Length: 229
Ligand code: BO1
Ligand code: ZN
Image (cartoon, rainbow, N blue to C red; front, side, top):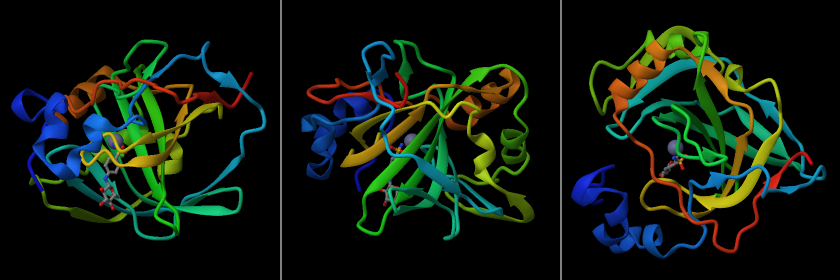
């Protein structure tokens, strides 16, 4: 697959031209991320609920050159309307990819799930600067030494459910993968309430990954829903 990046000739403005496989990055009308404008979002209390069934699992971390990612063994999932979305991996972007009311946050976590039919559900959690985040620190204490090579930290039991904010209010819309091939049909849920990490932690994450946020895309004909009104 052709190489892509976050700046210059292989940056987001050019993704769609780097390969026919990436055409959707340019032509798609359901692209992610977007600006989440709370006042413009359609409020509905009838969105389907979700149940988080994540397990404690050994920490497997990889810096794949685009992001710092933890790969999750099968068995952690989210249930929505009797549909099971298996958690495959989670990873980070600095700064945030989604905007909230027109502003970026210093970091965003993506929990990537897939159901039996191959449909993706990605849960986005924004980080703001504040108190130190213990869970993030566990990851920072177990970083892979080499780019491109997964490291397994046996004995480190980790459950990514600790990242969920207190408030379960969320935005929902239909979007895409935020990296090439920018595949659409992705079910996006982004929590309204940011969680906290310290300035030092956010700086360290930015140092590790560099800026790896795709700019916000037009909403086009989509509706943005919010789980409260
Ligand atoms: S994101 O959450 O929108 N930033 C995002 C971007 C790219 C992927 C996932 C989430 N890529 C896909 C790969 C698949 C892989 C899957 C799970 O991630 O295209 O090949 O199985 O790791
Ligand atoms: Zn992502």
